[in-house]
Length: 264
Image (cartoon, rainbow, N blue to C red; front, side, top):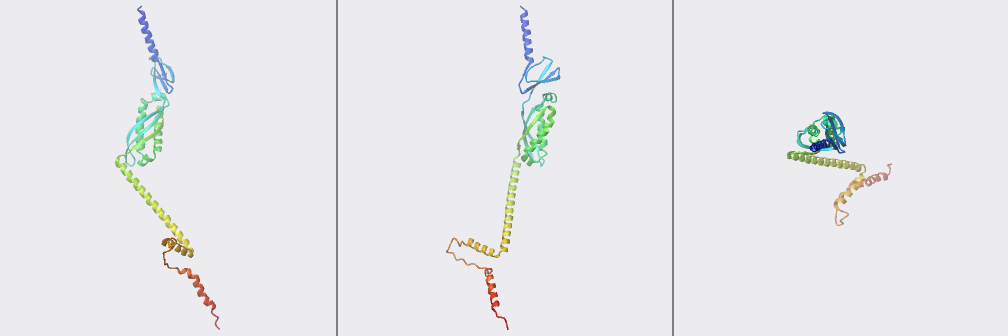
């Protein structure tokens, strides 16, 4: 009768050992197996049976991880202090390297992202940070991916979320933008005046080639200014150019000379 408790204890211990040696890995998980401390294999997904004491397993998640980079104090190349935060998307593509080559892959990736963000943005001016985010995102992603490749990590995307300025810089940028708008307005106005003067010069040259056109334009201007066509009660006196009578005067001048008889 005294053997039953001992057998029961043995059975319970065996069940505990069996339960602890059975591991279930999901589809997005892998297990890095070590045998007496030495790397053996990467297994999963599914049920994994481990030899108690002899084998240990480190569970690795293969899904894409979204990491928030804390706001970083950055001084741009034109000496403007800003705060920049970003978002990084990465995933483990080699579980063996992610366990063996780096102690804490997420923490190492976060620290590397912070230093890279400050280093890359510090090489650009403020205008480039605000207007060329796509290029900066690509540059940071390339640098991070090169460093994390040895850790079995793939950085797929980097997005600069926000660039914060202090109130003094915001007001300075607003004044600069207003001055730029005024400059453009003056340039556009000057270009319009130049084009109008060129067209007037061409019109004047055309009218000088045809003197009759000048007289017709003169009469048209009188009609427009005095409103001859709209108000019949107006009496308008205007000088008549002698150029209109020039052909008649030439004929009158030539006719007596032609009718004078020749001298005897």
